[in-house]
Image 1 (spheres, rainbow, N blue to C red):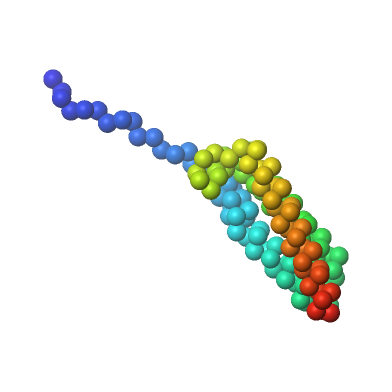
Image 2: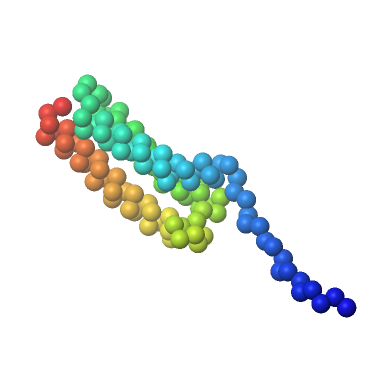
Length: 117
């Protein structure tokens, strides 16, 4: 007789492809830093093409939203609390991103006009 209790089967968490990690790194950190740098350039750099920098800003916002969408849809992204993210989470993220980035862009344009750059 074998009185040794059996251990429960150990489960390993599903592995995330490197692309999913890069997407997460982009929408969590790098994309937001680049938004701040572009907004700073709009507000305080002299001799820039405003239309180009505004287009870069908008493209970056769209890239953030798309990266989060792909992270959820194809790479099983998680929320900050560790639960699996859904498209409902993505809609909330996209709305917040649109509002915050719109305020940031308008603030940068207003700062440029106020400081006369």
